[in-house]
Length: 234
Image (cartoon, rainbow, N blue to C red; front, top):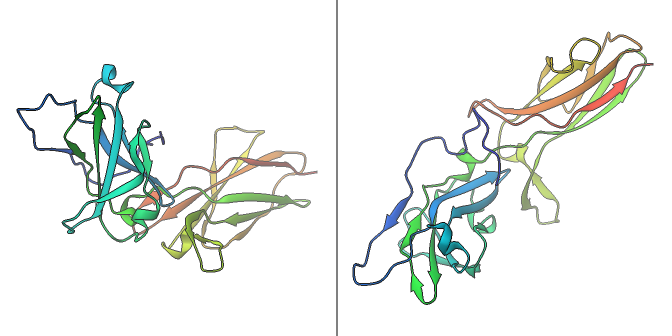
């Protein structure tokens, strides 16, 4: 499961997933619960939970998806009669501006549940964007930080993955940590689009770490921090 961080809501508005129609004459399984898309850099996965714990061991699940406004649901063949509680719909939700729905039903011993419907999911609005990749090179009194944008799973015709900068106006935020003072205290030293950032006037003999985030002004959304890259100025 992807962590949900405060301030980085996976879904920008609340919505209760729907359960579609009950047939009183059938002994129904409990519907799957909490059907929702989790998305990082457009890796879009539908997740759900079993209706009841005691039904989970024997149940298998069936997943369908559709674009908002279409009447016909499409089967996801790789998630048809599966035991896991997630289904990768990255390829099926590749038009990132389109709104999509997913739905899941359970079956056990020839008995079926009703379909449980996700909230409407628009990848461009709701994906969480990852941090940049950070490399650090030091000289006497400065650190040069090299940043690479996170990449989407989608590929160009020649085969390389498309960076998230193709989809968003991304800014990089670079923070420095002086380990001599306080390992938790991050100081913002740069915000902008440059992929190479030089941090100058640093003290020799001090250990510094650098972390970075991506920030999308149009959505007012930040990524998590990158992993720390540390160096000692000699």
